[in-house]
Image (cartoon, rainbow, N blue to C red; front, side):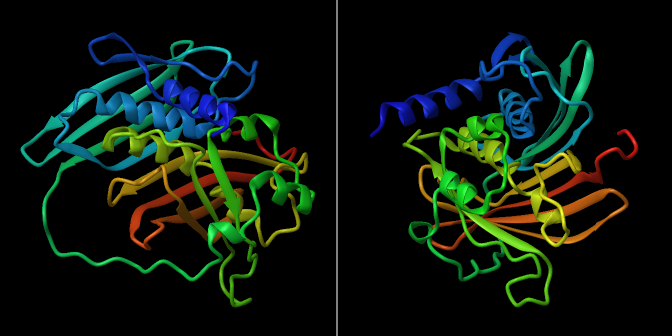
Length: 291
């Protein structure tokens, strides 16, 4: 196993292990890559980690809903304040405010559920190319000539990402835009159930909103387009096996009014649906109105 990959996964674990400052008050840091905008998945993941600190181990996050309010500064720490809204026998709820300079940059609400048995059904995993047949992310980007900020690639250093072919008009040529990718941690982390959800939350922000611009004549990471995540929601259906391959299938049923909407379904290698994701993002021509 490459020492570089082991180091990247170790750094990710450290990034997602927030520091307790006081009761329900935590501090998270960003990777030391210089000034810039904080990756949205990092703030969501750290906020979820903060919410989970006051929850007993027999309850695990089953959903989170978050709003991005301001861009975070990666050169400064982020303070997370947790509000204990509800503790019941089956469910518990937490709100988290992520702050920099005394101003909120993200609001998150998370719900935790005691494991129970009940009626069950799930959508099947679609038939796609296996991860072994998909190119590594760097190779896929080089072949397509599509730019991606180096900071984003650094955020994904702990993951092995294998994108499949995109379908701007759906796989049948007449549907909604769709894309998929496989991802897993680059080497085992052996995360517990709470950390596995945090690791998934971190990765879930990557590529999702890019699906909303697939059918349009613009490249996502380009000077022609202004983009930003506006909100992000995850429903956890099971503990994701983040050390193994996970399939992230994304589609976008709508875009308009300078916003794009995208949905994601995350399956494990056996075909079980482990999480569902939804996101709306700003997608406007550069030079438009300010957010």
